[in-house]
Amino acid sequence: MHDQRKSARAPIDIYLNKIIDDVRHLGRARDISVDGIWVSKILEPRHQHRLVGLELQLPGVFEVINALGEIVREDRRGEEGPEGMAIRFVRISPHHRRLISMYVSRHVGNA
Image (cartoon, rainbow, N blue to C red; front, side, top):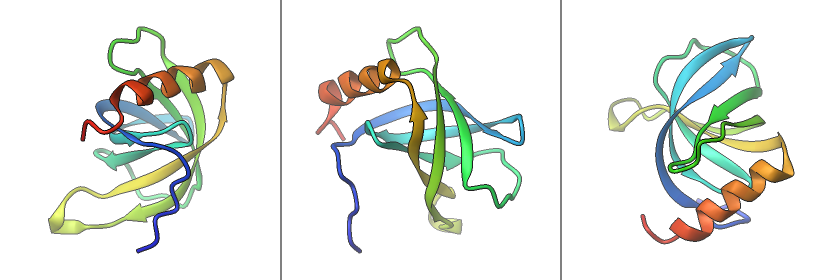
């Protein structure tokens, strides 16, 4: 499988809100980069939306990061593990992107 990642990813294990139709749904992040995030589904209805809102806090950072993301890949593993999705950040403030960049630079390679 061809890896389309353009930037370094760091492991992360946090819960976050994925906003679909103005309703918050719980998700769990597995890894993050300045370009996007992998989110495992926990409680979420089936939907056809490609754009979702995101609210998350990085470990050790008090500030809530808000972003708009585009679902670029979905994984429906079934019994092998939770369903999840790769989400590319399409709208995020430069300040929040810098916070993510600092987190990634401190944690890359710690998988």
